[in-house]
Length: 168
Image (cartoon, rainbow, N blue to C red; front, side, top):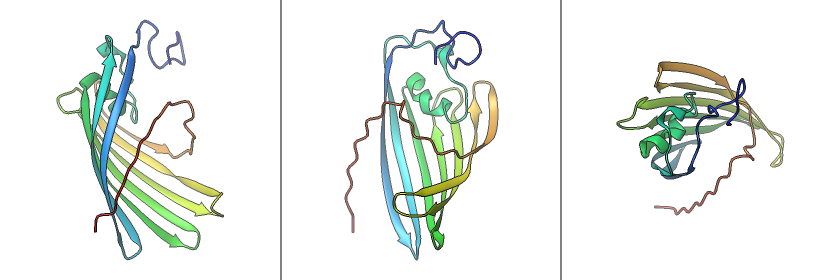
């Protein structure tokens, strides 16, 4: 990400310290006649071990509000997911999310995603769709519609711990 000239995301003069983001989310799901609806809400905490230059933000939709917790110290997120089998091997997934950085420049981002999936088997699934992003950024308001491109993010070190229980 640190690169001089074209292609760099973070200007090379910035020294980036070690950083961690901890995110906790409560999720509740229920099936309503073949339509599964999930509500979620959570808290994000950003820990920075060293000095983080406030001008080193990545001011791009999908990135700014996720990494903003490192600059703000915390953020909140909430959303709703709707999933339904359409016909045969086709499913639709609709998601609405809001990410907020209370008290920080570029306070919120609203995201909407719609995916259509086709299952050939348990091993093969094809998806297509879009992601709509609208939010506030240091440079002002911005809106984007992005094509959904399935990518395996093997370059991002993610450790995820999950636990769940059914509440009747």
